[in-house]
Structures are given as structure tokens and as C-alpha cells.
Image (tube, rainbow, N blue to C red):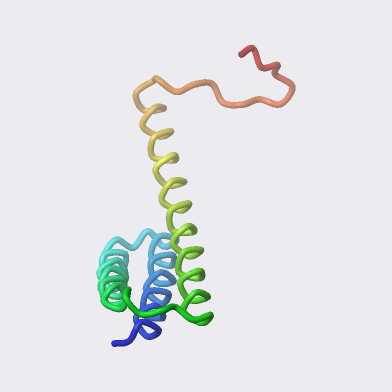
Length: 103
């Protein structure tokens, strides 16, 4: 697999990861993550080759999609943390409009 094809595979896997995260589909997330890692390994085999504009664009797209995945994961983790705090009684008070910040 050449670097271009590997990066396209990474991008497709990242789209699948985002869809799995949105659907909370753990099995699909595992499959997409394995595919992403395989694509990254395949692309890394060509690190010694010069990157043309298309390769840089594909790598940039993969980076943006990976950042989107990271944001989804961080939001999910924050929601879980908030729910656990509520369950444990350690939740900070929710924001109420018109309440002054005393920090």
C-alpha cells in the first residue's frame, strides 16, 4: 500500500470512528480504531519518501478528523465525570443565569 492509499484508509477509518462515537457503538469504534492504526502504520512505512502537496493535504485532513475524534472523546468523558459527580453528591452547582461569579 502506498502512502496516499494509506492516508485515505486512515481518513475513512476516522470517519468511521466519528460515526461510532456519535452512536456510542463500542464494537464499531474498536474496528475503526484498528483500521486507523493499520493505516497509520502503512503510511509510516513511507516516511523516507518526500511528501507532495496531495500527501500534505491528506495528512492535514487526517489530523483535523483526529482532532474531531479527540473532542468527541473529551466531551463524552466530561459528561461521564459530571454524572459520576452527581451520583456521588460531589457535583458543583450548575450554572444559573444571573448568578454572580465569586471566584
